[in-house]
Picture 1 (cartoon, rainbow, N blue to C red):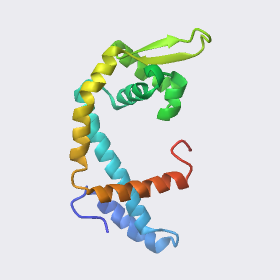
Picture 2 (cartoon, helix red, strand yellow):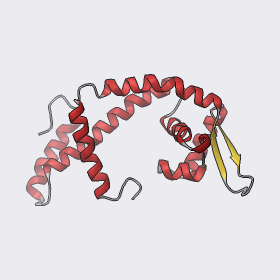
Picture 3 (tube, rainbow, N blue to C red):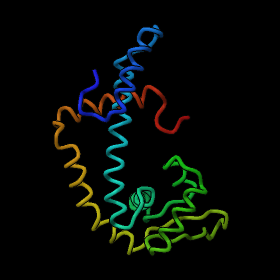
Picture 4 (tube, one colour):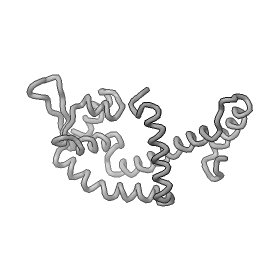
Length: 173
């Protein structure tokens, strides 16, 4: 049963689930409810974090690139690798990089050995921005999940990991 108090749109899904339970023998109401709540939770969390990130003059995609660069060797990664890790096209990465470069957070460098290879590098300004951003960001994440116990988080995380591993990981379409 879908909990009351969730968005009104769930009434539509509740009716659809009841109808599909009768019409399709393979319909699994528990799985469909879980999927719906997973999607709604993701959208809710993404919207909340995106608002905070935009309030700091950044986009979620820009933050993702800077975060990847922060982890990369010498705080740099080839653009094609960023595209692969973010599951977006190279054109999208190029567009996001343009905005980050304008802010002075990253720079693009061409490989000396292969001019076709373009590497994104996190600048000192970008690293400083991230280090100032992370504490508040993690505090917000803590507030979002404050109503979920540590045991529940571990159980949910294990279940989601099982789904990911059982179905080929996040990079498959």
